[in-house]
Image (tube, rainbow, N blue to C red; front, side, top):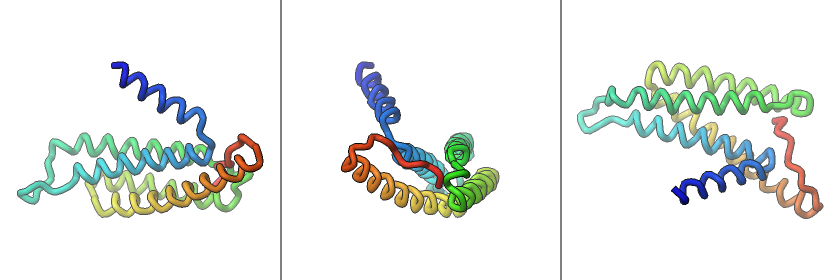
Length: 149
């Protein structure tokens, strides 16, 4: 119990002290975790058939991914992000549409495509957040990056 409380406190502190860029990376990490889980659950068993008992768990993992993508959408700042924010909004909208179709059809191919694209976005945001953390530390500024896009 003490371990669980300590882990929970650590996670809460990590989120509260993260820059905006680090928060975006954390959201991507969580989306990737749920996509990996859904892909794992959709894996074919030894007889080559999908396990119908796993469908509910796949559904929950995909829905959590959609919730995260929606959170990323509402965090966009169109005033400061301009064209990048608009492009990300369109991409996130497409992700959610594809996730819906993948969920309905239990489509590993669609999930894999989205997973790879989110992984690429995560890598880019991680690099930006890392560079910004070095820049703000050198300047003595505690601010984060703007998640405008």
